Length: 386
Image (cartoon, rainbow, N blue to C red; front, side, top):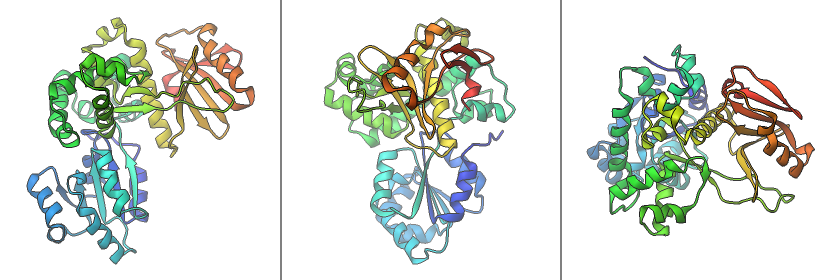
């Protein structure tokens, strides 16, 4: 079963207007499948194969002769030397668009090659796991707790027979072996896996590298490097605080989120919706889920760097969206019937920043229908985010 992705129209448009395209994202998010389905006339080659990666790196001219454009080059970050030759090929026939489609699951490594050689010649897009609207839009009905626990990896929804527990166990093991050893000189994969699980315990919380390092028994400098590895491979997202000269006491530390709640629940040992409902971490998991849905919404709208959070020494608003109309304030609450008291932080931030900066304020909760909370704030279901 194929589940259409929101990014497909953007990919087709980019193909018609740019000579090259780079599609990044974590492993198993559907990058390769999406490109091969949309552009079946392109040849396909994967640099996951060591022989192909070695030739692309050491004999790029011979590699490009074997795989002439139009071509999809999967996991292109494994051959950094190839990018200079792609630049030469593009410049030799700049009028032809859609010739080179590159994918990569190691964003930092990939983007270094892009920025060094392909700047101005390539569109860069990121594909995350499935959003709730993509899942439901394909005709798949799944209740909210089950959707949170199952997560958004396409294979788990295209084939419901796949066991999520086995999938995530294999995913973590494969990720550690394939990406971590490539991205970082990790002495102990067991320590890195413990570090990943420690990050899961802190999803939707301020990033404290010293605490992470102490809990895992590693140096703070190592924790800093490993955070970069997780971010580069699309496993975590760091959310920056919204800053203003008028609110000098705002915390400047980013918040840490796991990118997908299915992986988050697996790392926390939550395997069923019933376990989710009983978990003390359900509030943080819900906030992680709301943040993921909000990222999808902003990407679909073509907005980058629009998401933040607000926090000073005493109060926090989970999510802040910069819009043309002003700031959209959002609190994530795992409840069906929030009260006006749940909007106290929204009111606090509105007073701190000034009414003129605030476009709206909402509590994102499990209510089936939105309703007013007073003072201009509303309780809204997840569907209303779109």
